[in-house]
Amino acid sequence: MGKNIFKVFLCAVFLVMLGTSASWASDFSVLEIREIAVKGHKLHIRGDVDLPQGAMIHLALNIPGLGGPGNSKDVKVHVNSNHFFVQVRLPKKGREGDIWSGLIRAIFRPSQQDEHIKKKVGNKGENLKGAKVKIENGEKILVDIKNFSF
Image (cartoon, rainbow, N blue to C red; front, top):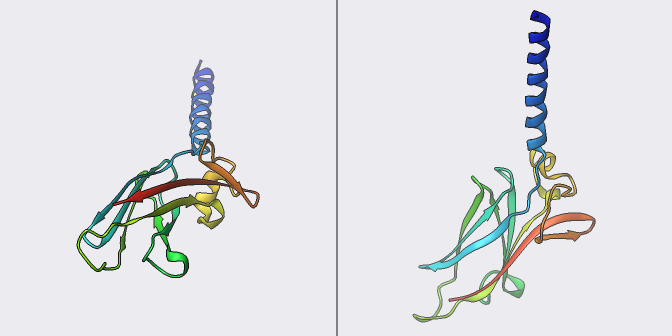
């Protein structure tokens, strides 16, 4: 009788461990820029993700009057509790009521992540799924693009 209880206990432990490792290798599909706002002389960008904590998102901003060649600026931001947020300083414009408009691309590339993130999403994005997945140079990436005007 004692051996049977021990066997049941071992099976239960094995199943719990198996379930934990299976949930560790889940699919990732959410990358969404959900808010773009100008507050003072700063552009606020917020978004939602289902990527692992600490994953890095690359934001490519294309805004006339901002940054270097082609009016572009690149910003990197880390995922924190399924969200990302960044403030970008805007140049002071000449008069009150100037309009800001542009394009923001949010990109998640597995090849640019730390090893612990790559283990979860796959070295080439094998665990990335859904409509926002693109294939670039043999790697799956997540992309969201938003136009804005204020």
